[in-house]
Length: 160
Ligand SMILES: CC(C)(COP(=O)(O)OP(=O)(O)OC[C@H]1O[C@@H](n2cnc3c(N)ncnc32)[C@H](O)[C@@H]1OP(=O)(O)O)[C@@H](O)C(=O)NCCC(=O)NCCS
Image (tube, rainbow, N blue to C red; front, side, top):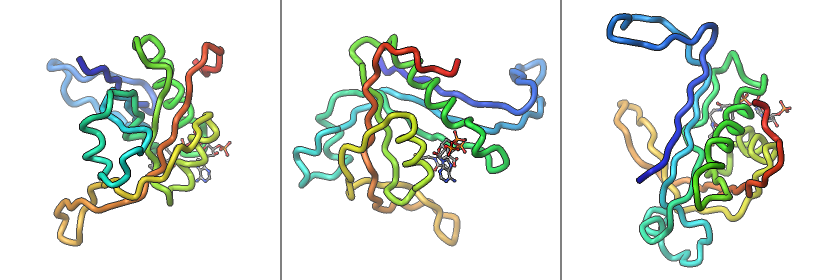
């Protein structure tokens, strides 16, 4: 079983889209998910790519797809989303850590995760990401990502 939680933050009133009410217009101002996926957090076999190392790694909670709309940044939305992910992970048996992989040139995200208590473990130049090329075709490129980890304690550190 894979455990996962996705979150969206809406501006104004949050309305659920139903078959009876399919055309509700809402503005999504932030999103984030935490998912249990295979992740190598030791880099002991550094001759293998990140993708190869995942195959023999155990599942761990990873925060992904964190994004806040431009007009709403620097108002604490990302911190709230990260804390909500951590809160969701606490009941997941067997996990007392949460991870995030952040591109080494993403200064704002690095600062955000540090502020939330995440420590960098190592930089991994064998990570990949998908971008759109000039003709809008998706292509995968290599990037260096910092593996960041937070050990969850029982402290009452949540905003909610
Ligand atoms: C990174 C991102 C999610 C931050 O969202 P946000 O809602 O603006 O973040 P917050 O308001 O919660 O900021 C929390 C802290 O993060 C750091 N931070 C956020 N934006 C920053 C910026 N532009 N420059 C420097 N530090 C920044 C600061 O430490 C900030 O605390 P402070 O405002 O007290 O200084 C947002 O800029 C974004 O969506 N970026 C594009 C997508 C992305 O990079 N996602 C992360 C992938 S790992």
